Length: 299
Image 1: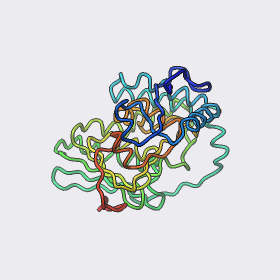
Image 2: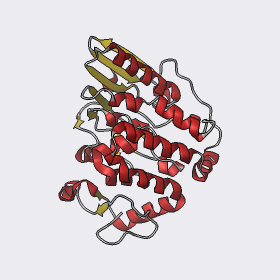
Image 3: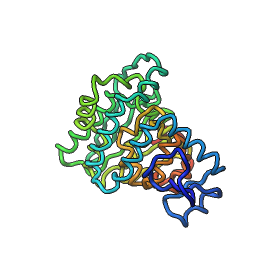
């Protein structure tokens, strides 16, 4: 990471170059997608360095991924991300986070994904509003099943992905974190049932409508869509490094393809929230629909 000079102490060697600058968002356009506008450069650097000191294994793993993800195909990138994520599940940083989290009870949902067909149009709605659409294994399996069935049918010309309730997705369901029996099994499950991979297999046909909190998987998955429409209340965040992990629902691939490795690195290392207007300026979303309220897309 650079700020116009030498990398500050405490940041991983080989990290994507990030230019931190102060000013209005439009002022950074001239320096391309490595620029991140912050209120105070010194404070931002201190926050990054602190995160790296607390989670060095996750930070180094993330930056290593971001160095070569851009040269891989999306499907190969998903395998690389899964290997990294699954390895970190057995690491000491995740163990510390898991101990701090404490026991949690999982809440089952009767219909985690609503599936509707209208001719060649497949409409998929995340449907766990009671937990802000936390992404659990049932949600993943329902998405994978619906997308695989559509691929077998062969007549789907359009796929719409949205969510019910006040948020598109609050991230992975924390109650299921740490439940994999071992890293090898975790990797096998992750690559064997990947909603991200299924979306990739429908090029040119997927539109995602996002609103409210789009955290972790809540932005990693829709970022694979060909067109992402966001309501003005949408807020985006990649918090996984703070858990001793890296994004695990495809974010190092999907977000990097949209905003570049430097800005992806900033989002993941800092854990900062990104507002909808900045996300549109960066290209994380393609369109803002002004006047739409949270949840309207899920009708």
